Amino acid sequence: MHSARLLLDSILDYAGLFPPAQLGMQPTVENFSRYRKGPDSWMLGRLVVPVARFPEFVAKADLLLPKTADAEGDSPWPLSVLVASASDEQIVADLERIERFNERMEDRDFSRAHGRAMIDTIEAKATSPHEIDRALEYVPDEIFAYFEVPVDADPRGLIATMASLDAGAKIRMGGVTVDSHPTPEQVARFLKVCRAAEVPFKATAGLHHPCRRMSTEIGCMQFGFLNVFVAGCLLWNYDAMTEREIEEILVEENARVFEFGPTGLTWKKRVLRFDQIATARERFAHSFGSCSFDEPLADMRALGLLPAAEEEVAL
Image (cartoon, rainbow, N blue to C red; front, side, top):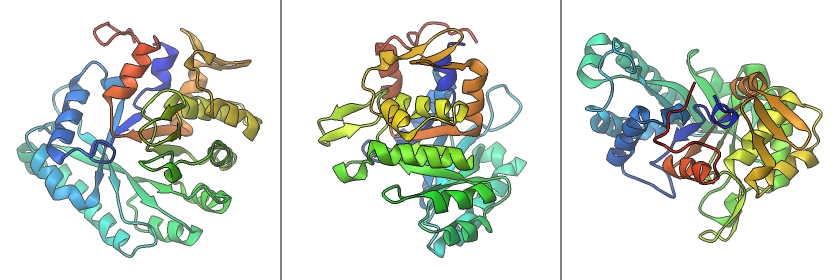
């Protein structure tokens, strides 16, 4: 396995329902089904669905979901579900709804008729430690929660709460407006605080391309997924890295400075072996949500960092 593939293994949570793609439910579930069966399924993580759209999801995905667990490749679709903000009373009802959904999907007769999907993560916004603490009282044990935190202020208090309660932090890396994009300093601080607390993170929005680049559509610089996840993996293994070093990785516009090889990954004098990349991904740098699956892959192939789609990739 090449180090670039290891870094990106199961990393992309497909969010086709969300801007800027904002596809309908039917093309979104059809895309996800196709990606799961395609040669690039190794990079695919979960399907991101808002809890309010459960009925539509079940109706549109009915013919696409795997019906049994017997055949190879027939594992349930993994879902990450967006629920109400942790400050909203609605989050309790949302979490109860998720628990009922999973219970129904575990029913053999139902799954044979309608197919199988399983929610194993949720995502909610939070602005105070109390909100996080209260929300986690209602999260089922089998579900991992990510809380999206504001990064324009110091997030240490929020992230410290997650450390004691076994939850993850979520950072919004962009959007369809200039002011939805954090600064490199804010992202570096977020990563450094998460590492100090040993809280895993996921990212969302704005990470369609490997490296930082100017978006002419929005009119600002956007981060790249390589920038964020190389920084995250290096920081996990070199926890003495300064915020300035992290910023340097985050603003890099040339993917060639990240040297992916058959035995590991190198940035300047920092080296990551395969086992270090795998551990960092498992424990810290979890995933990112993107409304596009094809675009990140196409860019990686254009840079020569992944083989062509039709080529066999040795595991």
